[in-house]
Length: 147
Image 1 (tube, helix red, strand yellow):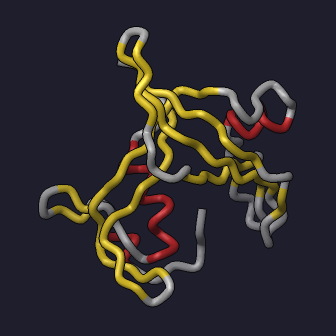
Image 2: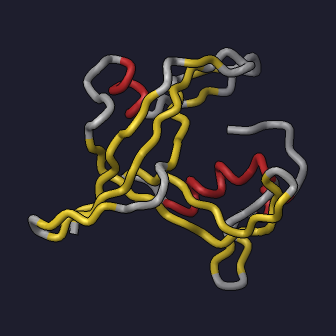
């Protein structure tokens, strides 16, 4: 079984408040069993893809390889990349005032889904839950640094 993500949209390059460049890419999951394609009919999921960056304190942030492929034109809308979508149970957080206890994200083939989800959930002061274990309790604490 092969799991792939189809790129369905890519934003123009943007810059965050610290000066780090990124693009917003949307993906749809597809699974292949031999020659048979199984398309995920859920809505596309987005992922921010970041350029390399060093902040004012000297902290270094590495580039997302797919950011480089998109910005140099070697990967574009309609292309497939190795990866999958994953959904996790998480500690409750609010979206538009409504409580949420699940989180779905795009996970590339070289990544751990729980790590990706917890990195993204940090800004919401939430964490993935596996069984009864909160996997990133530090996310539940107040922090000024995101990503």
